[in-house]
Amino acid sequence: MKNILLAFGILVLSSQLSWSQKKRSAKEIEKLKSEVAAVVASQEKQTQVMIDKIFSFAELGFQEYESYTYLTNILRKNGFEIDSAVSGIPTAWFAKWSNGNGPVIALGSDVDCIPKASQYPGVAYHKPMVDGAPGHGEGHNSGIPLNITAALALQQLMERESITGTLVIWPGIAEELVAAKAWYTRDGLFKDIDICIFTHVSSNLEVSWGQAQGTGLISVEYTFEGEAAHSAGSPWRGRSALDAAELMNVGWNYKREHLHPLKRSHSIFTDAGDQPNVVPSKASIWYYFRDVTYEGIMEMYNEANKVAEGAALMTNTDVKSKILGTAWPRHFNKVIAENMYENIKKVGLPTWSEADQQLAKAVQREVKSKDTTGLSSELKPLGIPSEEIKSGGSDDIGDVSWTVPTVTLRFPSNIPGLQGHHWSNAIAMATPIAHKGATAGAKVVAMTVMDLFLKPELITKAWDYFTTVQLKETKYQPMISTSDAPPTYLNTDIQKQFRPQLEKLYYDETKYDTYLQQLDIAYPTLRD
Image (cartoon, rainbow, N blue to C red):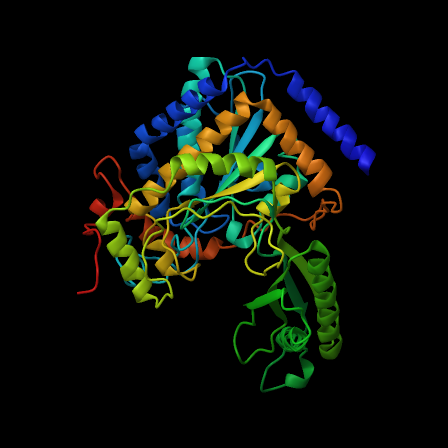
């Protein structure tokens, strides 16, 4: 294994030695970084429009068709080549622009939203735009606009200064289902990438290295099949698939007592029969199995398979399972993170207005948050590996992080102290809070990419950490096989139900300066 890693490191190094980048002094590099940050600042209007536009689409995972068309059209107009429907996912795409032989830097972020999180932006209490509809209660409407802003600023200076290299922009489709990035990695979409910078909405400007807090997971749907019968006339002739699904649920709930505290598991019934007077011949239950290690995830998965088999035996039904998504535990690159944090300190947090803080504090009070201090005013320190591993959420950027040196920049476009995956997390996401936070994040990304282009030794060191530290004891193994297909049918019916109502509310930037203006919302709108 060490010989393989050494050979791989030599290959990467030899590739970097072929780059014909002009040598620049430290002072010249800092000047160019200041310039690219200024270009980002000058594009804040376009950043705002993109953020508000994606917010108004409110598209769930695998249904991001409006977002796909809108974002790829912007990139095409700016000279990017678009590879569409990658990995068999209709709304997935990779965009590429090259200025000659040099580092290939990928910028990724998610784009999907949350079920039942529809919410008027800038309104500090629950007010759905469309009752029951999806909404950006995670803030994924801000990340790709941030990356596009950074890329277009870099593009200007790269052309002017003859800086060689390639920019790749890609979306994390259906991240809330953790159902795309594992397919990207399986299909080799990152094999020619030197460095990946991922961005994710947060309430501060921060980056970390090493194993991230939180979990990886495998998402599995179990489907039971039995025999229908008249529930009152001849129930003894039926074999209830719903009984089997419920018994699996009961069996797994007993298993929870014996799960390690770092593990997480949750489920929903996706098919529970058609009507009470028919014994259900088909029923399905969908699980997320989470742990802080790959081995722990697969152990839970194997145990759940046995519980499913037992439920099928008890009910004389058949069971089959389907993997709907996976996410490896995340590990981020130390070299890139340390470099990025220096740029974070130079950019700093946005200057929040009194209106911004009023909205933030009002929302915190509304959801009874323990944090009632408003928006962040101090940067967090560089995140370093913790001696105590903590459980928590997952993100399929983990699969990418085990394929190419990767970091995640978290940028301050949302309000601290909210519960996440909730209508309250949508309130800030088409307001000046989101716009300012994304502009700050775009400056950091642009400056960091400029460092990577002009200091190839950073890439060499990043790969050295990746091969000799990160991969020293852990080997990435995809949880999906070559035959597993992404579940692109998910959310189809929900989006179809609400899209006609949402379309009436799409942001028209040709008529209105901001989405708040189009919706006739005074900023901020507070309880009386």
